[in-house]
Image (cartoon, rainbow, N blue to C red; front, side, top):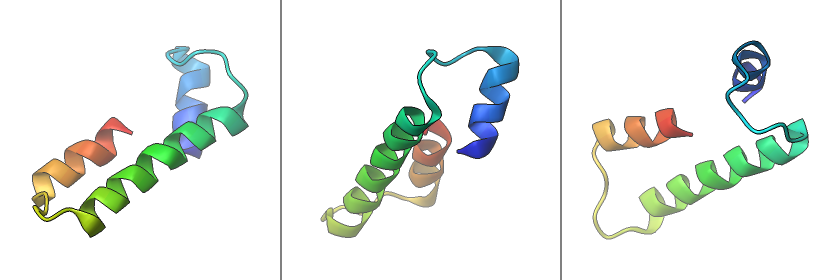
Length: 56
């Protein structure tokens, strides 16, 4: 997440929110992806997981 925040400062792609809020959003999305993988009856393949991580 730190790299994303540094990149955003250069490119100005994300809304101007405090770093703690952006970290919380990314953490929540990451945890949702982990829970989906752990508890879903249908396991996503590696390509799908990589795409989800890249999207975060």
